Image (cartoon, rainbow, N blue to C red; front, side, top):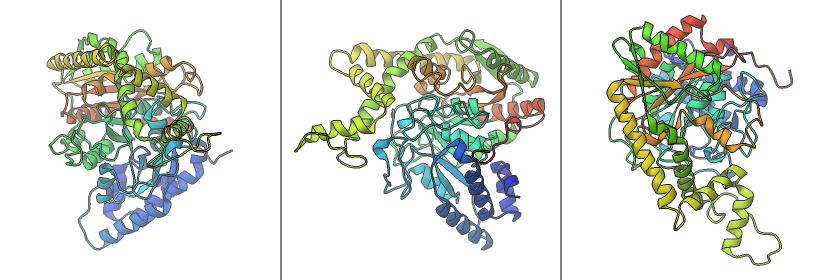
Length: 505
């Protein structure tokens, strides 16, 4: 029964818990057992908290037995990306510089999960400080794609997508700065959503780029993503960038699952050259399904998207340079004393700590960002990038005047082998070419599985974008397309993934 439990969707688990068919303790234990069997190979978790998850599960079971009215997801376990602080549970952001750090408070997202009665199984692996597209930049070793353990699971949130794809959790929280929820979803055959910027609180999220970062759901179905979004969304007075409005009606939209009469815009600039043939084929098939279901398909042009990657890799490193300045060896985390200096200065300790604690990719982006913000270069680089950002937002506005939602492939390729792009940072950065514009403009985006590429039999993803604060459009279109694609495949895409067994088997 335990192995069957881990295959349930979150919605199915919620129904089984509510009806008394299952207890939360049974559900949590089944997932802990699954983690013990497969995570030695997948390495999706950095920390697990079996004791804490079971205690939370017992508390939910007791409240349910006492007749309390509980949240629909009460008792359904979840994993959390290790960039969101969790009181008393290690939070490292995938970096040695925070190794062993126990936060004294919970992020707002984590508080809301706990308030809904959702046991937290553990913290998921990630590229250090969310810098990367493959999870190869984690200081604690890479996560492996459950479809093929020799390939990457995407990044920076490869751990969150992998726990869901490997049935080690029914739900996970990720964060998306330039595609770190959506790109991992595409290459693992899962669903990932970046909500509207400000739609989910960033309080307690270890910042990479404050104007871009956004937490969101990682799931196996669109309905599951909607249910989780409804838990974590909504205004938070602790976050000055939080939108002062309740979470949008995403669950209702996902249950409605209708595209009749909608206009779907295919983004001209996010396709063609540079996209793997199998990715493009599955995308075109998905667009045709939407058209067959009653949507009107039009082509839209967003010419400024051609400059999105360049603008992003000036804005993000600049904000990262500022945000990461606090990791100095003085207040918390790692402290390294310089060798050969009897009485080092504070500056020497800081330099030694940052050199030992940060990985190569983090150092690369800090140097780039510091240069872009330096005297004499600010206007030429950072200032110009912000102007391009405005043009990208204008292109979105014009496109949404012609279409209700926009679509593109999520990632240009399927999952690539480990090491294939580590020595070529630009090639790695190009993995986010289709996802970055949404972060620069603050609009919401979803990736859902569009099929398997014919070249390698690996998952591909289709990206759906909606206007800011209109997140429910993602769920209505996504759920309708998901239903059609499941019928086309003869079942969920993940059902076609190879079975994982015990380490070494």
